[in-house]
Structures are given as structure tokens and as C-alpha cells.
Length: 103
Image (cartoon, rainbow, N blue to C red; front, side):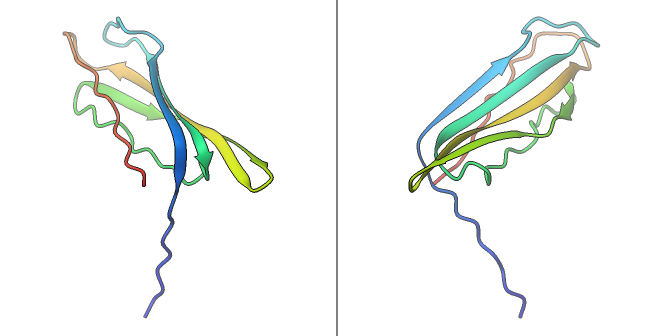
């Protein structure tokens, strides 16, 4: 039987921030969605799925940036996810908010 590895990520006092480079776009323009997760704990294992923007945007994910420090027996840091978004059709669109489930 093949053994399975389970990764448990425990973050405490974590913060979640989502920013958009530009909010008013025309078809073909590009904006960057930046999602930053920071807190105490092992931040390296955090994964964020590519945004599900259906047929509204072409999504180009960047490599995440991880910044982590260890002080004594505490680990803290932040992980930054960036996605370039290009609108595919004109019109008003409500951009979604990401959800992240941690325990």
C-alpha cells in the first residue's frame, strides 16, 4: 500500500489582503490582482488556486513569492500571489473575492 503524506498548515494571527492594480479596464488592457497572506506559522505550504473568472478574463499566474523568518521557535512570514488579468469582453463585471480555508 502506498503511503500518503498529509501536510497540515497552522497559521495564527494571519492577515489576508487582496488588491487590484487597476479597476477600470478596456478589452485588451491588463491589471494585476495581488493576494497576500501573512501570519505566524509555516506560510510556504499555502496554495491559492487560479481565480475562476470563467470567460471574463484571461488569467496569467506568476510564481508566488514567499518571505519567511524564524525567530527562536516561531516561524512567521508572508506569501504573495500575483495574477495578470486581461478582460475578454466589454461590460461591467463584479470581480470575485478569494476564499482561503485554513485550520
